[in-house]
Image (cartoon, rainbow, N blue to C red; front, side, top):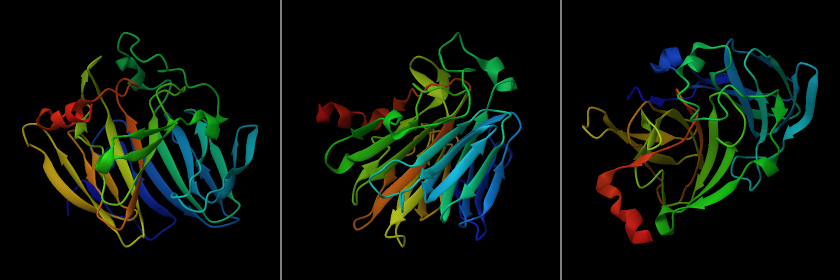
Length: 283
């Protein structure tokens, strides 16, 4: 099996992706299935967290702050935002599930970490400016439709570059059956701002119905990396570098949660020149 494809565990902690086991430097991703009434303590030294209640409802406490009823959607395919709490580096979070909860824990280096030595001439004005723990209201999560025709997908920016954080960028995407996403193929693996930023990325995939799968190709210009994986429901795909389009078969709707981080907190991508003509045709 490809090293880029991570299968879910049959345990409370469904996924545990760290820089160490992923073989990179910045992005971490964990996924928990938390039963109603069950508590969960979360803290990662030197790393900021973005807690995304993908489904279900929970209370979240960080220091003296507490938020009740965080979340509320029944599945990731509901037409509503997830519940989201930002936790700055060094803080601990206590989660208490009101109902069964699917909880994503997105992480990346935070303040007072060596990563901030990589600041690049102030090109990210949020870097080192995470602010206090906070709930991210639905009104703060911008939505957009990208592409057209069989390239249409629906994007919710959970923690975009315009919102305070040290490293993290988090987004969720719904792609209808038969469509393509992250397409035309693009990459963000060079620290060459303003043209392109270097960002590691994870894709957490969900399918409706859950028996489905998507095809995701990860490849570089010189094909030193060129792998195509079939990701099933609850699989994670690692994107350390290269282009990474997703194709969704007929009959299934795709959801994925993206977590990105790199030396500079900016999302600047380059399209595969072989397929960039598609964008010119769409204009």
